[in-house]
Image (cartoon, rainbow, N blue to C red):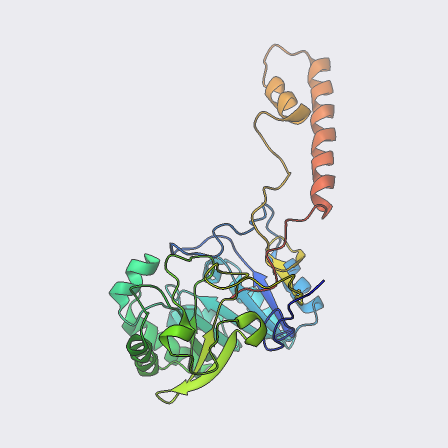
Length: 335
């Protein structure tokens, strides 16, 4: 059987193996139509900050990148960053920038290595159309300056989107804007799992910068310098968009992802309803809970129902603690 082998510079080809991605929170304050986590796996259980930090440290990875959802909505960010930094971890965050203020940085992000700010247009009104959130550019500039004052690296993330950032001229305009607000680097990424709004970087940039039609085998990451600022281009392969040919029996290097339930998973997971504590129309637990509300029950019947409820709850907890079956893996690739 023939196998397509990923480029060694790809995430799935073994690059960035000293990184641990953390799905820190499922909620988000933005509403992007092409959100790649909309159908992502969202556990019911939320582990405490100590468990998340301990699992990240035990992973042995040097770089810990906090993702979501919108990670700045996480209530215990200050504690998490402090624990990880004190354990000699390099901590990174990817955020939409709405909550990124001088005050937030001073309180929560001291010691952080870098922040990726996802803003998808150099015009904040158009970025609002894309993300449904309003970014104050003046506050953003102050926040970036504050991040630099604590020695944090700042990269702007921009998805190339049809009718938004979709030409070489607009890419240059975005780079000029990023340079003006003080960013250290820019990443332009193609859309994942949104073929209608997909923009092919290779085609619009005439295959410059090592951009290609087969990112799986020829490389999905390429670097260059535009307008004096470092640029990274991130292409989607046929595993992530139907606009490119899918690899044949692809062999990939799977990486672990830490979810907010405190568990490590092989790659990002697709949506799966958890089998825990259902409260409607199911099994003896639901029936016992419903019956226990009957005022006409005598003491013996109540005791019997209490035993049933306890037994069923214990069973559900045991099932939850078992990791099998895990949700189907969404692969080792995320951006």
